[in-house]
Image 1 (cartoon, rainbow, N blue to C red):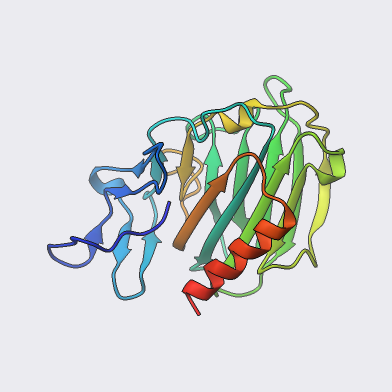
Image 2 (image 1 turned 90 degrees about the vertical axis):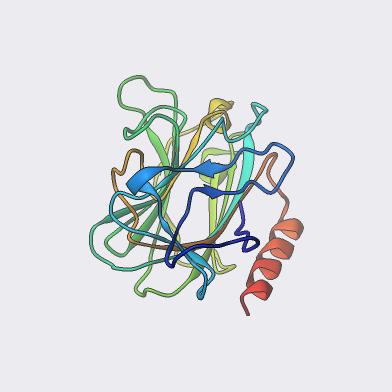
Amino acid sequence: CALDWNNLSGELPFALNIWYDQNANINNLAQTSIARPALDVVGQEIDFSSGTYLVSGSPLFVSNSQTATFYLRFKVGTLTGTHYLFATGADGILTAKQITVVMAANVLTVSVSDTTPVVPLLNTKTKTIADNNYHLLTIVVDSTQSAANQVLCWLDGSQAGWSSPISTDLAGQTGMMRQTLTVGALGAGVGSLLGSMTDLLAFSPAQDNTLRGQWESYINYIYS
């Protein structure tokens, strides 16, 4: 999804009804009523506050691919509390075959859960972020790799400083790509993000390092 600034009208601030999908699937992120985040025309960003979030109309990907690449440009408004940037799967709860990205205090955590019933096990990467600036997060999920390489992350183009507190083996897992996407919360306002985003891109199958570098450079160029 990317921001579309054409044909906006009405009073500021704009309440965002739809964050438009930019491919032929037309799987937009949408919201109604008071759950809508604000669209900041001056800063060209989506501002999330308590209880605001967006949800995809259908599963994230059409295929049952075991791999995907995500790009997310975001900033958090506070380094206290728990803020879900996005999550796949059931609304408001942690479930099997789920991908979650969350800031808890100043620790950014990317997790993919396995298929264990009731309490799924996680393959997790973490990194400390000590500021409220915009950052570009890149995530590659690939369950065909060894456990240590099934979830790989870059922040602002660097893998430095990431740790792997949990490395559950996700071998052969596919259903994580066939779930709906919630942006700005775990679901139904749970773990609401207090912060902003400009871009969220998702590709499946996963991109190689050459394409990853090109996309990171392009996103950074747009906002340079």
